[in-house]
Length: 311
Image (cartoon, rainbow, N blue to C red; front, top):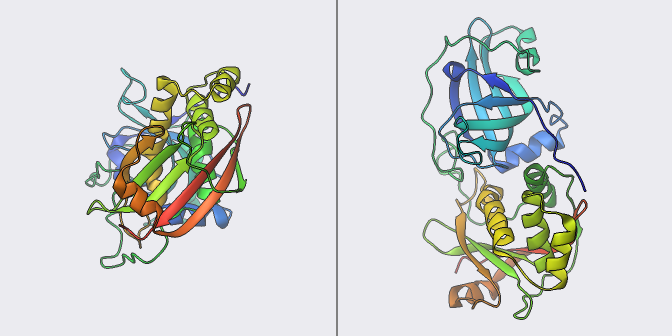
């Protein structure tokens, strides 16, 4: 069984944080595609913002006499929420740091953020900007009027793999597969993602193996326990709750700065009845991705991501 890795996070002083927001998923994809996602330093920033594990996050910091820098990364854990009694804040895995303000070319060094002995920058600097409490909200930097509802909201397999890998701390591989069959005899998860007016725009369907392997992997439940549940077609409440936590984060995958805003809708797991609006949405498919996930130590699972005509 894969062991959880223990990481050290260097603290960044709240006083130099000039802004923190959700990073558009396509920007995270661009960082990865251009080969910049190799920084992998880890920092801790105290914040009351709601950025669940797996959320792509963008932070601006102002360092006296050096300049303003933009940090792009992925939230790995949330203190005070995931860890009751711990200090409120987020542990962030950095993927990229960009000099966006006054400062010389050498000021982009990452030494300030590396290791337990890292020196924390001073508190002088710009004031904090307003944070959004909604991790799925469109960033304030998005251009007005840029929403294009006709553009697909479905994330690509690399973005899904990145999010699942970050949540499970594993290398989750995805490849093309056949559509997931909605089975009334074997539990199948059907999750909707809705527009601001409540219409269903996307549906994420997972077979029982996918639900259990994700839910078990998130809580490091032994793989043999997960396999027993799969073989008996049983979905324990604790694994279901863990799977729900993953869904809470996954809304960020469907949000683009130039697309409609989606939020988590309803989760139905058969044999619970499928509502009429979900059935109608499933009959109005405008696009889909059918994938097989391979989760180390746990096994395989199937998922179908479906875009609907927003019924």
